[in-house]
Length: 466
Image 1 (spheres, rainbow, N blue to C red):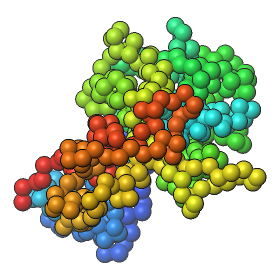
Image 2: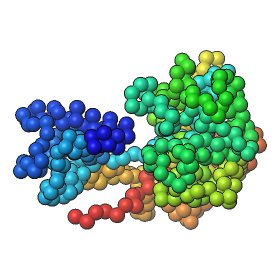
Image 3: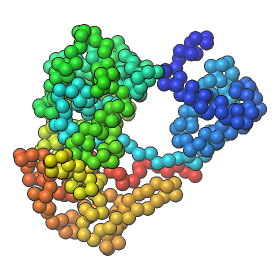
Image 4: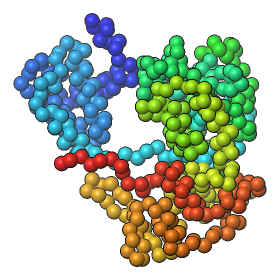
């Protein structure tokens, strides 16, 4: 029985228990001279566990972390043969809800990597460097599959080191039927690989063909030529992504490489530090949703309740055509400025290599939709709610108050047409870009509203009754 109890948990769960007990429960018990195990049925069990929660809250830990450590301590007792310290504790859920209220902190989503930043990074990849070509592949796989960065390990050693059940080896990337496929096994939302798409422990996701920088098959060919894998690809267990020193690429190093490449393409270092690999997944979702709708994005990215759907033939056809359509979408006259970012040339935010002119950095659209870009007669204001959440709103000289830039633009266009901006002062994707694409970003309220995940969009969650 002890053997079954020890093996029922994943390595990450075991790590959580070890941290909860070793770093928090043991010091708590020593501080208040308590036994390390709460006796089964102890009349003091509720008070002891409530005191432990307050002890964690005083450490300024987030509520999800507190509940995770609470679970770890309870499971530790169960593994030792004790009853749960929370068994039949009255009103425990009410107490934990009050803790959630007191420890709540506003959560920020992953900052989306601008489309143009991704393109500029790919343009400057050193095709003789294994690490950089592998990084290009990693970015494109994350973009087109909308996967989490969990396909690479977090550390070199320990429970979160490279694991064939979770991380990508060479045999997990293949070219079949004329397109590239990547195998996903244990993932965050399905650690035991129980989803219907998994066959013999693997779920293959397809990436269609494309031309130019977004051609995954081309990058894969270059990478194979540089890596020179010694065994056949379909049997090679070597970690697929490698670092500059030849070791397997781990998540912190991947973030560092991404930021180094962003600085190389001209982005200021402080801004580059605000981006991480998770932002590529956000970009992939928003761009795919804009091209082919929410259904395709959810299936390919395994989001929400539709993530378990199998590829039927129409869905597979849509998935395979995504890369080429995304490329066309970014260069077409109807492409929204917001997902691809906008150039903002500011003397304080420009980096110039020796002997070269300064290169405008890539800014997310939120920077363009600032108070300086507001139509005449509008001003930007900030308000803070009782729980500390900041919210931006806009006030017109007539007293009209609105809460998003698309609303401001629609209201302003209904009163008077906004004057066009000179096309020469705005960026393009090249000489062939159409005049419509060179329009000022503020003339595209529909795309701003429907595609961009705005920072100032009010929450849609229903407030809990008090």
